[in-house]
Length: 348
Image (spheres, helix red, strand yellow):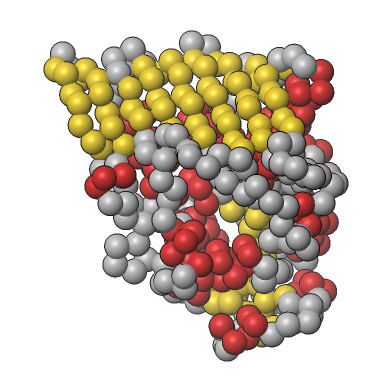
């Protein structure tokens, strides 16, 4: 089958570090166009691609089958809509949209046009999350009663000249890192009954939210989701507790993002592997026997996202990241802001 002719709408961090390297490494895709308004760095990295100056050139090109919408958050809805109306399949960078209403409209439009619509929730393919999911599905800790998840960073400065540090709808840490974490929670548990949230600004002179503490309530299960830009000494990424034991992941983040920044080839030898000293610890009882050991971290694989997109477009396979599922993430983000404002738990 012919490679999927693909266009990337921006060559900022997500375009240069994530989408372009992954698409270039995958034999099922060909980068046909990258939008850069003034620079030509994309052409230097990918001489075979066509650098265009406007999104209109992508939308009007009948040869382009798939469009990656990786522009600022507030533009996702408009640009994804235009691509779908032009008969193109669409991958939207997270967050899917900035409102639930926009998410619902995009899903309806994709159905009407019979086009693929998905969201780049690449953190489903983080090694530590794949390992956590394995422990969860195999019930190695018994019936799960609590999950505490952290995605912390130390960034005690305000990064200049970036839209991510400016006020406006769809900005802040909850739309940024929270869209990853809540997606993982929805994958494991579905939608909660209640969400109770505290969101705010901790950094000096900060303009956008840079921490959150979310409590999600399920029947018999409590989920805690936290993130901050002022954590210099991070604790475990995940702590999963159940009726038989616990699984505690390390504080080390998945190595794929750093490898991509260093221009390493996705899928090359050792890709996504974590050293043994960073593996998570399982302390539990399985079939009456006490088990206490490190669990090998499953190597992360962001290429898995585009593997699925290729299979869905060319072979009609089921999407791994369904837009209806990610729509629930936007619902949770909106409910979290409502909870923070009203200082109470919100029933979903």
